[in-house]
Length: 248
Length: 109
View 1: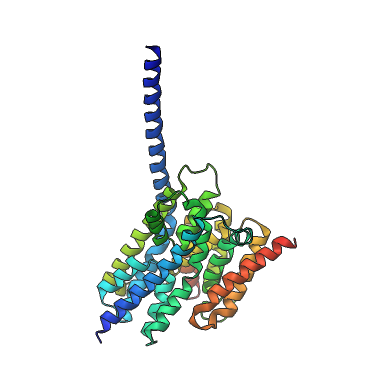
View 2 (view 1 turned 135 degrees about the horizontal axis):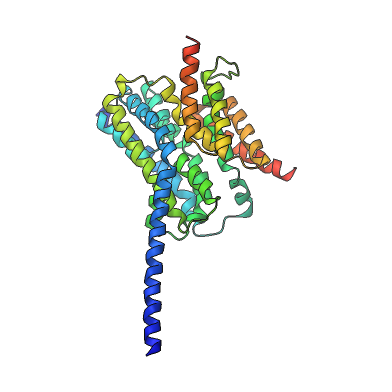
């Protein structure tokens, strides 16, 4: 008799524990949404700018919006749009956009260990939502205490908020962007947020070395065709950081 | 050829390539361990890649290196970096940056 009561109590306890855990996991998703707020605010003018630029380059409104929805990578979208606007061949525009996005493979590698427990289909969704901001915000949180129960839920909170805001802001840009002063200070918000996330990522001297070298090579290599300067600068910074670590 | 259809193909091609890039390493390194050398390299990804991405916008907004005070983006960027370093967040930094750009363009007429 006693044993029966105990096992019932244990079962109730297990159910409570599972419910608590589900609550925590949901809370982690919303923590991600909250932490993405500055990046979302910064993305709004940039997304509008991409919408305006796409229209100017000859995109029909629906396609301008659809490309933000589907591509979700502002720097590459703008690079392709600018090339299309000046009449470059489309394969060149596509290749340039892909090269600008090669850096995402590095984020993909850095986040992979945190996605091991996801099903393949959920990994595809995680990949779809992978952006500079989602990567930088999530990795910074993963390295901070207290540890997350389900890191991927936090990532999905950040990523889906950014996706929704990015698509929405392109829609707004397509609708009313041509009436707004997009070349003024508002056009710089995306860069400011990335700069702040970059500064937050500098936690050791070798990482500072990596950043300084990457900046120098990026500025020197700005004229390299197909936007290859970006990935060359990123690689140079990584190598410099590793060397600084070895010879410190 | 229909111009919109061609643009649509370009957008879908960019999206497909970008998705493949995004999925590539997740697909590989959720299945196996990351080699030691690559793991070391990945420690420098946030610092190096984010910097490579933003540096030209602040150091050379017009395409050539400009370290003068007339480069408003650089002045605002230094303030943004300082605030981000102090607060370890990006909201205050973003607001300071926008305010600085407005103030600088008002001051320089």
